[in-house]
Image (cartoon, rainbow, N blue to C red; front, side):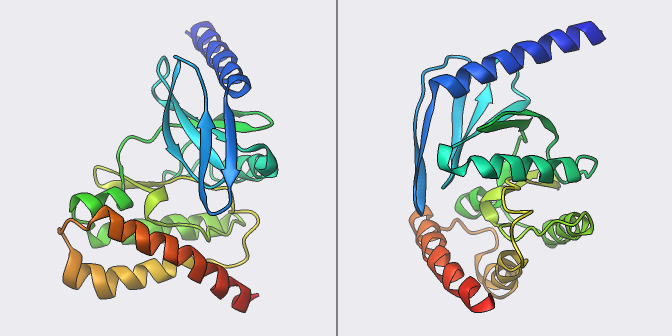
Length: 220
């Protein structure tokens, strides 16, 4: 059995290395990265400002995050962050990593961003779990400042936090505190269980990035 697992892991590493070599991920400032790839073994499942995420077809429990070259230092930092939370239930498990990528557990479920758009109710216990996950990470010397609705995944009644790229470089946990304020003052009394138009959610998401940058300069 051990030999079989070792063989499968070796195959996954080989396919991941091929994916990284054959794909081009380019950052565009505040916009999502552009991606050009040809690999039948993977499916592109998401993009951020510095990286793209692929899901393996042969190993569907694994997601591969490939960074734009100018963000390769974040691979090292995110890898260290995943190692620090390796035994915490709220975070994916790190499988292996390379110069421009890392491979982690694929978390099945919907992000809280999806829940807003689809009108899926976000109960108080989800907020409590996020608070607990953040506090556990802080106990390991990390600073989860960039926790937002897109990187909180809801699977049944359990959450997982993904995207740990800034956990070792940030100084303040601020974003989640502001989202909690939104949850208590806007979401619960007015939006709970209601579909929020995607264009409206994206408008506020983009506007928030500019506001957050300004607020962070003030905090510094």
